[in-house]
Image (cartoon, rainbow, N blue to C red; front, side, top):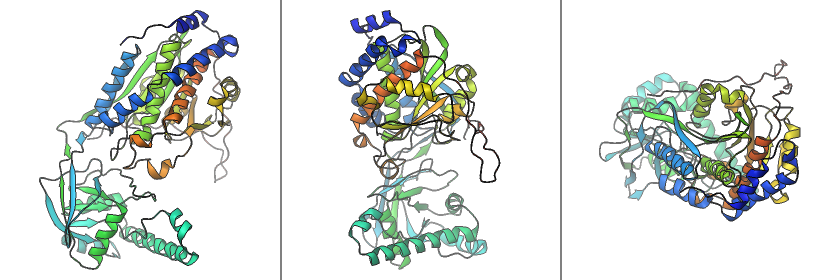
Length: 516
């Protein structure tokens, strides 16, 4: 579908505001047009349903990530926006497939579990006894114990003190009950950390080592502290399935094993590695500038996700915000003064690899960067903007925010000049090079507990009113940045470190372009 140029858009094109007029009457007309388009004709929920439900999660190296890149390019091109998938490396190809995990003795119960990313599957159903790791005193005891785990499923952890959120205890428990919970939690943490300390290896090394020693599989549990919510990450180098089991089911299995009640489980997983590496890539879309095509405003969001759910708020909402902002601008003001680039980065979750590769491969964008707007903190309204230590950017940002309608700018705090991030999200890939990347942070919506890297990060968790406002905000900021004077790159003096030495601007890290 090709967009038809509306009368309003034609009138705006004729205005072609300069840097000076961007603060006047014409600017207000453009901002009103952006608000009208983004509010009355929003495409966000349609796009979100397709991305989150149909395309689904976008794990690096998975078919879902490749499908997402194709989908995004098709969307941009349908809006007459130039777009491409830009490869930068390869990664281990892996597909999650299906998983069934059941307790079969001493009773039957279907377990709630997820395979960790890049874990091997099974060759048909595998049944085995469940055992807990004893309180090992040193590496020698570990070596002596390892032969006993062959063909068994090993619990890598201890019984959780509770699977109720702390807030629930605080609401209902007596002080004595809270004190007892604190003691149980401390004992559990001390017991597990003590084992790892005494055997001298990390939890990840232990998990991998258990599978290499003949375990039928390893059971882990990374409870977020919220009702029924697990954080599900990855394993590398395992030779048997590694599962994350819910807090409740992990506790059940641990108690059965501890009391020698003969727990046995059956696991069947169709997860499989690809025969060849998968291509890693970014999706890049461009609205070419009419006067300063070699200067850039970048709309930034990472496209990849973990895959226990659908990556809705981490970072599907950021992706949709940037795509919708580009659509709005293409509709109402398709010829910005500077070039506007949308960067949907791959492999952020493994170390900002996509954005680091783009910054490394495109020095012309880094050199010509006017502003990069990065969003990666969930579904909430943007409420704080960090200027990342660029001390000359404040007057520009205050001017841009002052021009916005009250309902769009309301509640936004400016962290001026702020401090540069060393690697928290993709803006860091540009900030380390002295290019003005800015971090736009959202209201919580309990992001860290319920959707960040969890098995509950799904379409239904999106606050669409907030995302619509964010898309309008980004479009307005991008337009002003594209039309205004050049943002200076002056860096603030950083506070001294703990050693008393002067603070240092973050150094750039190379992207990881290959994982076999």
